[in-house]
Image (cartoon, rainbow, N blue to C red; front, side):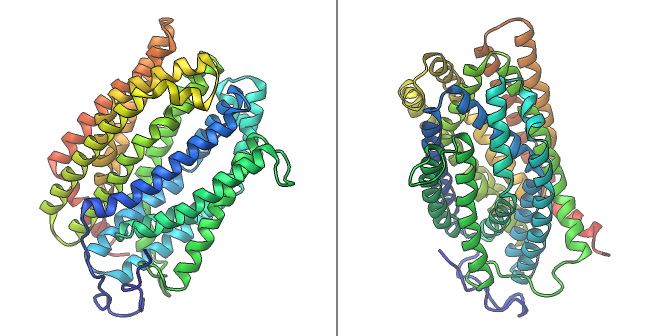
Length: 466
């Protein structure tokens, strides 16, 4: 839904444009995000089905390409985290002018970063893709996937930053309907470009990357048009938006999230390197299993967005206890939903895996991976949702610590030990459970401590003289 109440005049008094309802319920915020991400997951599954027809090597190449690409997007994710915390806080304080200016600053920074990130993806794609130690054909396909996808860095940044600002302001419906259009365009283009239909060249794995980039280009064009036309809930920041204080505070809040993403992606690279040690079939199974379970994951992400938004808004409205209540409610919603979905997915695991790729070895590994990850769903729900609440409060440093301990110390550490002992790849997948146990405990303890309530205020005081 397009909101216009808060965008009448960016230079008006901050309290002159008050939305109908500042505080939406958890479900009101979560369901559009869940539905949007669910569609993205379904389209991802369809894409895997299409690419899977090219063989296990093609699936492994796409898995590798996506992992490297998202690793290089860590800085953009950091900017997005800072945008969410700062816009939600401004919105909760009914300072809609500030929310608009933060969004404009974030977008400028995001665009610059996106252009800089394009360079290593284009010039060093083969070297980066080669770190997984996969066979030459798979590595070359992954490199081409990364190179093509990086060309669209700018549109990914636009979608990420403006989408984060809208959700932080309580508008999850606009990203939903734009996501519907993006996903429809994506699935059509994947089919056409992978197989070379309708007079288009047959691009194989690279076609999936181009389709993904073009579909997000459509979404970015729509967002920019609506934003500059004053039809979004968050307006365009006027003159004076880019100030030292805003940039420094955005960086101060965002950079731990960026480091977290670097650690996260680096840990994943190490983990997938160990998985790749067991062959292309195991590597492809991991990619397929994650895509199937993403149907459950997106529910947690949806409630994470709702929790982050409500925690930030309640803190901005000087209601810390309300922030605590909303955080726990969002978490329990996420746990219940993810557990139910994972049970259904586990029950049909083999049928779904066989539908996506008719390779008995890949299917067997995929089913085992799904069973193991289904056991971890309550723990993942806690990490997703309470971790999102901490980030929404501006506490981006503690999630970094949990990622370093859980992912690097526990997951990679256990996986390396199991590989050294010569155990099967099923044990490597099992290391994920240890990771999520540790992270869930750490995040619960942090949220219960309440220390996150003052993080944003401390950062404001630190830069108040700027």
